Image (cartoon, rainbow, N blue to C red; front, side, top):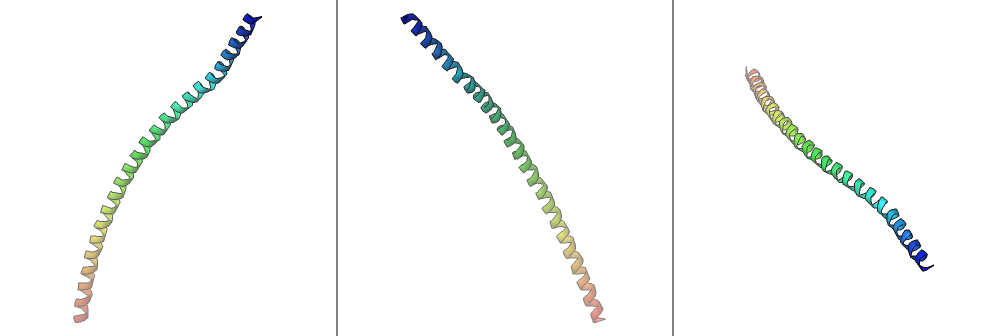
Length: 87
């Protein structure tokens, strides 16, 4: 009778271990995939931010060029208008 009790306890322990081990291994796999996905997403966001900053720099540079041209045009118009008023 004692031997069957030991066998029953060992069987129960093996079943408990298997019941706990399968979800833990599944969770480990999911965490590994998520970590890889997050790392990939971080790299993509860094690239997006870098390209966004470059695009904004180009836009601001072009805007500054346009401001200079507009200022030049306004100055020429003011000179023409002031010479017309005097004449």
